[in-house]
Length: 386
Image (tube, helix red, strand yellow):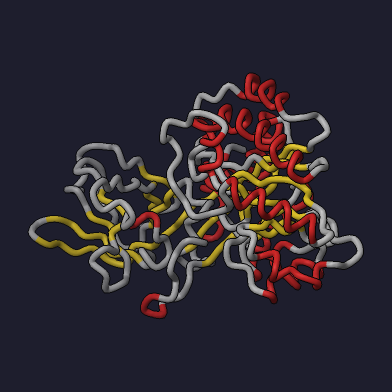
């Protein structure tokens, strides 16, 4: 059964029994995305759960993952399992977070040298995993020409701090396991080949300073929602990875690339009104439940997403002409004027009370990146499609 058939069947079966707004996650698509991306990369693949930290979903897919990465203490509690390789990665560790990571034998990725003081003597326990150093993307420019193509960010360390952290790790009697490269969102297509070349040289510099070998390199992610269509030559990329010494275990990580296409956001239409002759479709879900759809981060270039329309037991073709829609504006239930998450074309049917609007590609960062406390509205529900 194809994905949309499974979603249609799930909505038909759950209609009247689930609450909107809600998210639907198709487990089969998550597994397919993970396996396909891992095969194309030819490396280990770590799941970044900040993209989707639904406990049930994580529990259903952990058996295929080469590891899971948490960026907060709560995420660590969600992913911890004796049969799961755990990583923590944050610029804002607390002592409690560090102790919890050590208690479950997670690998700690250092964001800056000062975090070593927080680890301190508490880290000297048998079986502690070697530390990782997070590399800021600007470091790539120390080894290759990047032509300003990498967006600036505040994560990880520059080359000076990387070498300082290497010295401190050695002086503390701890082990340096490897490097974690921060690509940045949607950067894999543009930076993957350059990253490998830069990292190969960076590894050499770090090992010379460490006077020893590292064993692991996480080359990051940066995969888009639709990475299959990004025209990346994965076969050539796998060959490029040969620049990195074979003794080093290579991994990538992904959240968006695994979860995005497997998620659907569903809102119910609770009324339609007209202002100046233009329909406004009032829904039970909005900016508080899906912040990204409101496009508030792109104030000058808002490209609103078009939903699928569910009515009377099935999807309606919203591109059909002859309907009463006149650029209907879909709005949420809050008192914010930015609570607009779709503007429909003039052609096609206008949603009406009782309909559902279904947005595709909402499996990553849509639920987890939303501010659900606004107006004390009830958070969106989450359901798995099996």
